Image 1 (cartoon, rainbow, N blue to C red):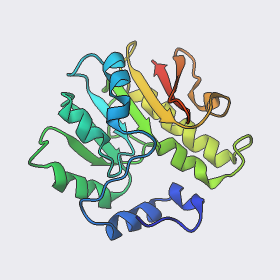
Image 2: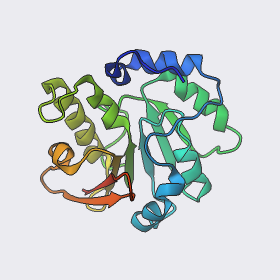
Image 3: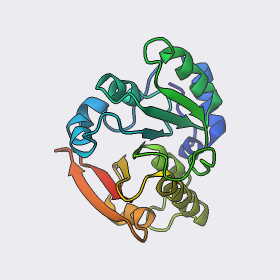
Image 4: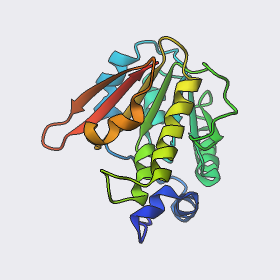
Length: 205
């Protein structure tokens, strides 16, 4: 795995295209927790296995494939790296034919209609956009706008009134609520883990 020289690179398309191109085609990487770790929470929050699910910034994570194997067949994965989308399409074409892979920036998902998904899941993508700043209390305006743009797009594509946005991160509530609090939505926070806490933010549209 090619680590960046500067954490800011995590927020650039160029870094991810290069990294995926240099890695073996069967490489995988998961931010934070695996699907197995989160499965009880996912099953509780998304009981309908037919729900249309959007995975934001999928990378080469095993999360969506393990979710698919758990019975959630209607999954659309997006990432702005064309390299990883091509790799994942090839990897899963025969074994998980119903799963979709699309090259797309989470800040502009205009190819998707309004109210076209039941669930959206972000596990590390918003965090990658925040790496351009070491000041979590006062991030640059561009970081704030990028994160808000993602959440606005997510809320647009979620069905009303039952759409669900799940965001998994180590980011504590006093650093993350500003990006997730919107009119006509409900925000809940689950603290997960024991020694090392992480958080599941649950936004209902």
